[in-house]
Length: 262
Image (cartoon, rainbow, N blue to C red; front, side, top):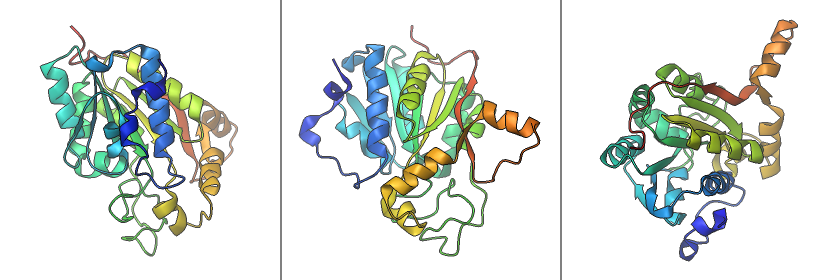
């Protein structure tokens, strides 16, 4: 079996805009799930509302497309009702960090045995391009026409501080690395959080001077830095530009997990 066997081909083509990074994330996630050898009847995908949250509808398993921000609450209920199920949550930065922020914190704290894949396009893509909790300072959106004045949420640091067992961040450019990170999250008991910074050409890209999809992907590539490399540069006294962001595995620990398979 390959990751393509997990798709509901009758639901294709998908609704995503040309050049959207979400398709890459879905492919990588399903490739990792396929490597795990999971049974489709024992696997459930859960999502909330947003572009990323349409993903479970294209996957050949049971799925829940829930209300805005509540994916982790529903996923928690499913996992505790039947701990033998494998639970994967697809979510976006707005769905997870805004209305769903409290659920995110407490799912990490409880260390629920689920894997969360967050497609972070740094904007509300489905509802019109409003600024989200992860929109960088100075970036344009329909609600920040003069540039965002608020600091962005660091979702990985929040997950680490709240108690998640596994945390990693990659981009839609780092395909193989992201796939391996998802697999590591699936293998780790407890709450796993894997963030993917992805391009949104329709709303974020065109408002923030990325004329082509490749321009935004190139930005993600050139502004990503491994934590170890960043630390080495800091030790040498070099200044790290403010628009650089850390990628890689950021946390792996063995806190007792809730909802581990019986």
